[in-house]
Image 1 (cartoon, rainbow, N blue to C red):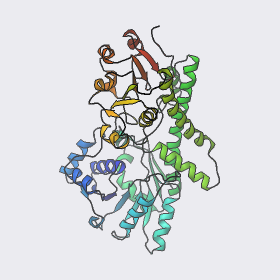
Image 2 (image 1 turned 45 degrees about the vertical axis):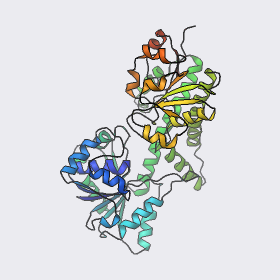
Image 3 (image 1 turned 45 degrees about the horizontal axis):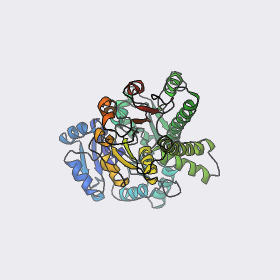
Image 4 (image 1 turned 30 degrees about the vertical axis):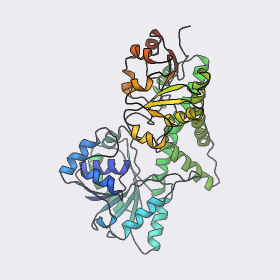
Length: 435
């Protein structure tokens, strides 16, 4: 099938590449010329494990192509996926300008038997509004919704082995076209959930809101465990063994972030408010995450008796490992809170340095983890990169000004660090140090 992807960001690039891997002919269009030229050369403008190899193979096989102009849309394309960003506005609403702009560019350039599919995360009712918008202009396009559930750092695997595929459609023809696209998955008995467009849009929002709730819940439990002397990791593992709960997203950390959870949570809350409904749980989740991030910075300040003019090392700036994305990263927020109180921050991240430099300008950046820790009075581990676990901590202590380690991912061996003479402050556990 001939497919066109509009918007070659994270979702568009992964979806386009992996759809071409399934044998479809895919054209990807984005008005960012620099990005398109980079992709044409087989290079990707983001970090996602395994994606570059699939992209290179499909470029060589001529199953995927990249264009920087809407004028290059093939009028005979059978399905167009809209995968543009839907950022939050100042009030937390989803800004749909990019979606409507993309649709406006498409409908004048393709045949009316083309199926337009919204893959961007949009508020429930958006597809129906777009359908009415096109109908009022005299266009009779079929419209569908096909939300994505890709996790950064494991997107290739998530695409190839999804838990389910959600399609929201208005007609049997739209369903048939999407079933052709996903035939190889259906043949493997991966569940295909067919519903109306509003429900499909709602499934995406509700899924992300629920996962954010799990993260906020376990972080609140971590705070209580810390006060009571309980162990959050043992608690979370034991809870997760209950199949009704599950282990996913039940790992204490510095808070949730990234391009999806904060944005989608705010958009869902605002959508409910527009219908005179207050989502009390989700409002509390948003507040809880904010407080958790703030309390982490306060904990560092308390232990160090203030941070003014004190050098602090930060390991990890991305919102999670396996990605270069620092959008809404708790690590960035924590660093900024400490900078606001006059701390001198030196940070290192294996993949997120370039992106971090664009948003966090008042700190120093080191070439490696050891360089960041040199002369530091405290080391904060904020992203769970494996390389941080494998450092030579016996030698590291000798180059630090004070042996304070704040492991906010519970990644390190606290007992080993204690033997080396560190003061260890974990999340949801008793702090340990030699008296």
